[in-house]
Image (tube, rainbow, N blue to C red):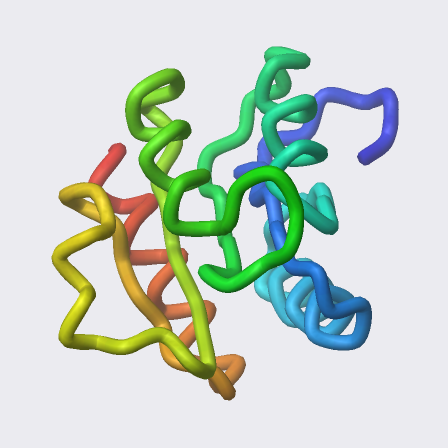
Length: 128
């Protein structure tokens, strides 16, 4: 993000796989959003604590590190309630879906550009 004040919503991508994270960043930027990237929950929390105007956290569920995406989603919901959360996974058991906080949107991997764009638009329109 440049030093100029942006009018585009800021999306935080939290994904440990470099290729998946870069692909998601490209498709989200092409959709007109500003993007921050984190490789794990610790980096994501540090970015959230920096008081940047993050509108949506787009996070993988299964990540290595001190906490995974599921616990990260709960932490963000508790500490930063205005931040919308979109959770993704290629392995997440959908029968366990209830373990995510209320209001979290889920996108299975592999996700299509149109699904990402539509989901971000929908969660952000709830804030308007």
